[in-house]
Length: 85
Figure (tube, rainbow, N blue to C red):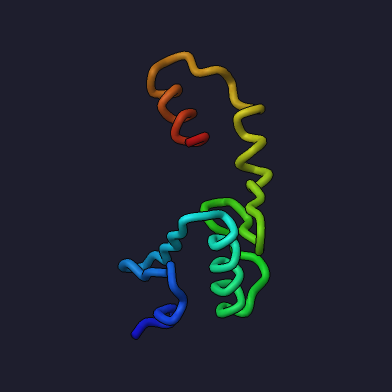
């Protein structure tokens, strides 16, 4: 049995922790349980800061599109879309 097997809506897949729910309230409750299990109040994930009840985008990630030069070629456009997606 994995470390999160007792929490409904949580599944471990390879090295990922997947949380699946039908509604936002349940999602928030499960996130709170998972964070409590790790004994933390905040987790950094893909540049974002996840806290109980909300997610805050990283400042660097949110400021980069504002300071980039407009794409001139297709490859630059692809890099920009990869950054914001």
